[in-house]
Image (cartoon, rainbow, N blue to C red):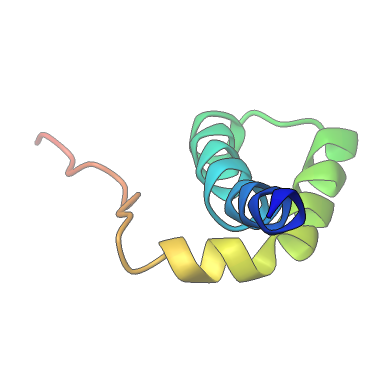
Length: 68
């Protein structure tokens, strides 16, 4: 039973918690990141791709409308 709970916690962390935090981080730092930080962002997106794919239909990070 302990192993099943451990699997659920680890898979929830991998598929939900870390990708959501990564989305928030990417939204905040995307346009001001250094080249090293951008490489790290690409690695994290590659590593957590399944979770990002699961969350993508529910999150909307489109740019805000311009006020003319």
